[in-house]
Image (cartoon, rainbow, N blue to C red; front, side, top):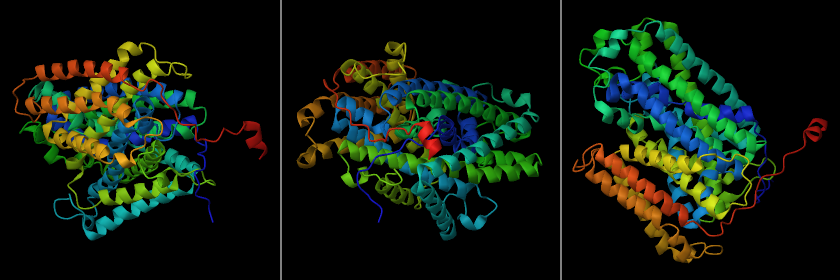
Length: 533
């Protein structure tokens, strides 16, 4: 019988594997659906939304690069807030992260089914909801992801590398072909930015851009299992971000430029309805049957690859949450033979199945998940600031120069992207976090206080609770689904100013003596020993 003790993870993932994890996570279902939605929200200026999203991701990636190299832990996303501010903040970040990540696995298999327009038996009329057969196909994909992750980290990494190579080559072919069909007149329809600056910014969250830029979290989630993490984690973060941004900008331009100009008679607002499967629709209209077949194949492979990655990443996040002490300890155990957190993997599998139940379509879920994802990003700059102040002795192989500027800038950027999600999304997302905060205090009997007292946990979390409250008020009064009492751009200026204050407050109320978990990863085996073996 296999041991299921606490065990230790194993460093089995190479630098190339990590870059492929980042690119593989980013190039999922986002590019298959988002370009037409972004065109309908931002018009020809939609490519600017991708650039802004890429810059936000890169700035946050630099912060994560310092944290990931200094603290290469499995599920690091949810452990850094715990290290810097204690179990309560760690619990709040962990809960929203597990919800967001597990839903991505379900959303990706749903995207596969929705794009499979050649098999109408998989979807009910309209394409949003699955038939019984369609749901069983989604379940089958989840079983495959689960098994690939259950066997070993090596099997997961190598299979992902092969899938990712195909995932990157296919969009590159699409770009080359569609650029030969470019129609400059398309970019003059209704002007360059028909929906103004608000259209450009709204596209970042509600259009699916931040959902598409998912690559940072899996890299950080697997940082504890990569060889030479001090070098390879920053390389993977920066390389995957830059490559993905270039790819997405070119895809957006190629799509908008190749649309038959007479299809834009009603303007850009209706593009998302006309091109619900944008690249498949374009290929069909242009008469490129082979390209339509390639897009359909990639529509199965790309989301599947991303779903596979997030099956792995979510299990590491759940593992990290359990190691923080605010989730059942069984999920913090590792199989001693394979070095895989199998109980956490089972939990991820169950949650992913839940997200494949008959919920709204890809487009309806993606806005909520995008906001949840950027919310998980937002805590990183404050954790990094607090750990610099209170744990300066920790070696930082990647020391981010200019952090005094980049840190607050990263938090402002994350706050603005979160704000652009709008009141309808933020009201329940941040409201849920406030309810979880109250539930934590009511459950004080089970709250871990062995290393940080409850009083100190609450003291170190007031900045976060205040952040929730202020963001809710500004969102309600603001111009993004709010009552528009505070007009644009003054609402966004207020968000930026509030973010600066929260950043310094949060950073200065971290734990005076952060307690960092012991590294639960086995030491890397010397190359000569591995070769001899």
